[in-house]
Image 1: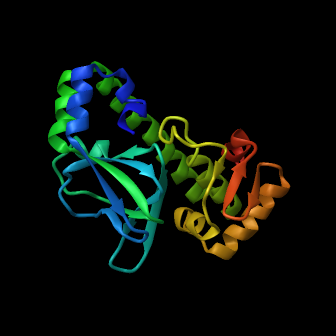
Image 2: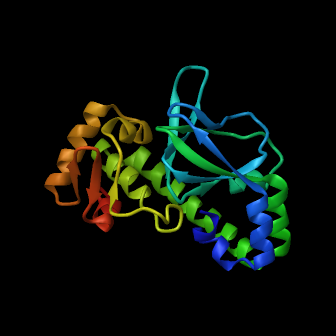
Image 3: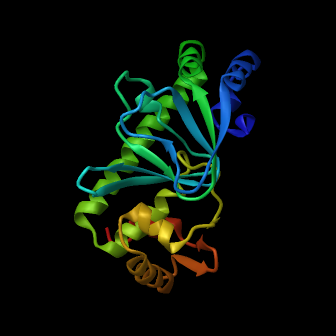
Amino acid sequence: MLRRTSWAQGLSAEDFTRARDGTIERLVPGGGYVCSKGEPVDHWHGVIDGLAKMSSDWVTGKTASFTGIAAGGWFGEGSMLKTEPRRYDVVALRDTRVACMRRETFHWLLDHSIAFNRFIINQLNERLGLFIGLLESERLLDVDARVARTMAALFHPVLQPGMESRVAISQEEIGYLAGVSRQRVNRALRTLEDAGFLSTEYGGITVLDLDGLRRFGG
């Protein structure tokens, strides 16, 4: 799996061996925590297969959902560059296999690989743009547009490079990512399907017009 990732393809044989030896695999059951808010940041994570949600849960019971992470997506590089505790939760929405690179390996690659540095800089820049867009949709757009942008974020060409046009995702999972009820997701998906942006079928959704989803409501 590591050899197929975009960041690994630019590594020398020595650097890739170091990356491989410093990475383990975990199986996180649906509903389990890939990582938790407040814990030490010991690993950089990548989703091998499955689906996870990045969010922050508050003592009031409220949850702020940030984004979904599907197969091929890596996250936590910003946290790895700091020494503070983790500031968000990542929860598996279904059984999810996760690659976990040790902190020491991550920083060794930063110190020795220009290609890895370029990947991390680009990753941080793309994630910043994604979060600005999601914040805009949360504050300025209606629920239909929020669902559209949530779906589009799952197909980000840099942050989610392994996604194909069809994604196996339930309406409940979309609701968790968008921060709305499953019933409201159902209505939004019907609107988006009628507009020709996607098609819904049992067990998944096929995106027909990704640019249209990104622009919807804006």
